[in-house]
Image (tube, rainbow, N blue to C red):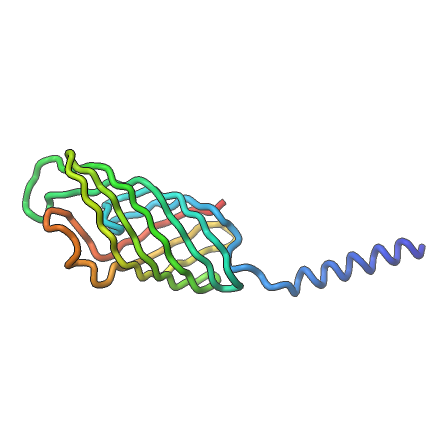
Length: 164
């Protein structure tokens, strides 16, 4: 009987401690994101890795493949699609609703013409903890002057992702 009471007391203490422990801002360290319009690509698919720091802060690193479209601003209707390699590194603050600040780079190759764009990133990220779905909206402030004329560029974008 004494051993059973001791076991019950230990389980009760463990449960109390686990309920009062602070949750990390990150429950899924890896993820896949599908992006539209931003990061110097029209669409992209990226792998996301999260590095937790404290309760409400974490770093994000992304690497993926995208489809940059060029020539649309100059009225060139030829097939100017190519391949892009978007990557980013950002600091995030928040638990479910996060502020994201970072830098985005994109290496693109369109018909043998290589280019690289580095852009600032400012965004909002929503992470649904139980369903592991994430959603982000972002802008590239002050970046419109740093993009070549032949590159179709939108200073905003969004993505939806799934964490695992």
